[in-house]
Image 1 (tube, rainbow, N blue to C red):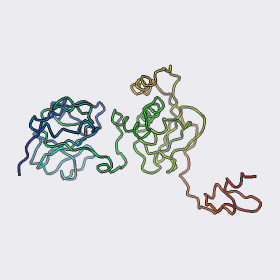
Image 2: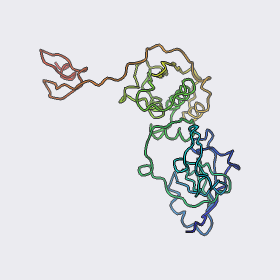
Image 3: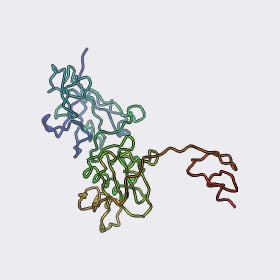
Image 4: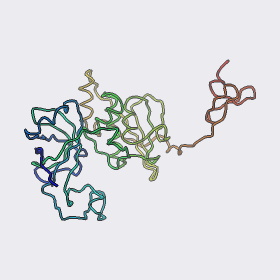
Amino acid sequence: MELKPIGVIHSPYKTKEEAPFQGRWAEDLKESVIEIFEEYRDAMQGLENVKHIIVLYWCDRADRNRLKTITPWGPEEKGVFSTRSPSRPNPIAFSIGEIRKIEGNKIYVLGLDAIDKSPLLDIKVYVYDIDAIKRPRKKVVFNSALWDECVSFHGHSCPGLAIGYKAVEAAVLKLKISFSEDEEIVCITENNACGVDAIQYILGCTFGKGNLIFKDRGKQAFTFFVRDTGEGVRIVLKDLPRREDREKWTKELLKMNVEDMFEFQAPRDEIPKRARIYPSLKCEICGEKASERNMRIKEGKIVCMDCFEKD
């Protein structure tokens, strides 16, 4: 078996100590340049229509004799096949990069963790529907990659989404929280504006799970609770001078320090009770089922709210 490099990666990381342990989790995403050797240039056709690519490269400075390692996740030793460590018998690395531009035989990408001059083995297109198995994130890193994910979830970039994004950053800073698989984290939002989508996407606080509570006050204020510890904080947007240019205002908000952006207060509300599942009852007028808590009595019949409100 023979592997032949098809190019080389020019990276801002000159040593393994400089490189992040996961490229897309770097707090400051840096640009790398993938140089494709001239003999393989024709294989680049179509990449101009691709946003994300899977980059396979050779960790030529890795320890090929290592079979066990300790990861950043914990102190226990693990076999390298159960980790993403670059040191392994065949040190093939896998990274997802976002294409910024293509010039000739060079691809400019964000999100790689390769060390400078790493040999390139292959490039494949990243297809979300095939390659992504969505699971709760263990760690939240606030960088341009996470912001782009929020924008994709919400549908567009705007100041409102940026406010929610920064509110989550503030909550993570104050409460040391991450994604809520169930109801470990609860958010009470005092508005139903764009920023709530960032809270849903990053922290997993959703109406469906019952850990996102809408308290209609029309304020840019969010209260976060940790159920296990009872800790909580109310985060309120300060009276900031607003910009007319929405794009510039969004960028300014994303760069702001959360301490300059929000006021931090003790919660005004108690921790909401865990979501309760109510049985469904059949409306005796229209025949449709509804939650027991939303049924009413009308002329001696158990009816849904629609039928109850009809004359």
